[in-house]
Length: 278
Image 1: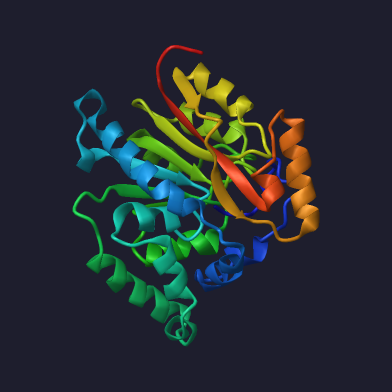
Image 2 (image 1 turned 30 degrees about the horizontal axis):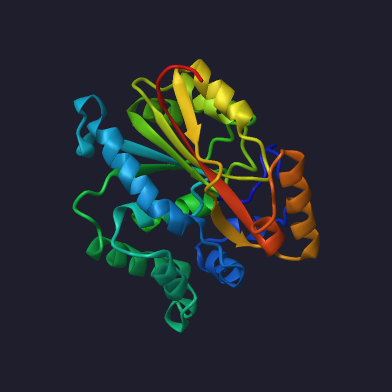
């Protein structure tokens, strides 16, 4: 969910770098609220279902499953996965007058209590990876991530802490980061994995996920996607971004009518699991 570019194909999209380097998520929610950024809402039931399926795979146990959220920013996916809360409630919370009056330290303490009270009995361990260090730090302070890492896998191999943690990971999730990371990141992650790792990724239709699909296949993961079903991500910031998205979707063989032409980015869900190659 971080908008920080680490070498991926994000040219043409509006930049939001400044909201990911704040000490807390208030600027993130304030900036994205007018754009109706909603992909974490659509991912919430999907990730919960897939986590349960992955935990049951191979007679596994839910309490032993570790989820790694890529481009995790302030831990929004972790909040929605493990707590009885909606994205709409988070927008209301972080843009409220109460939140506005707090220091970052006070907000983190307020959040720890809030999420503790709403933690689900089937909560899983969630690790986060994002090059936006302030965002990862806050997600840890708020109790949303069990571990957080800032390794830039587009440029360097995993550091010793991330490498030691990766064998525990059974499910990798991604929302919104497909424009910024490439198959290099997935190669680095899966090279250090130990057991079967599933990947669930919401990827904008403006970028091709095929290089990642091919790389995942090299690790025995078969990827499926219903490209006829799309998930709205957010409104465009301006007409220039709208034109970029329409042209990018057409260049990849897609049809932007009723989707990007109507004013929003749309994503496709890619599900990768162990299986025969396509």
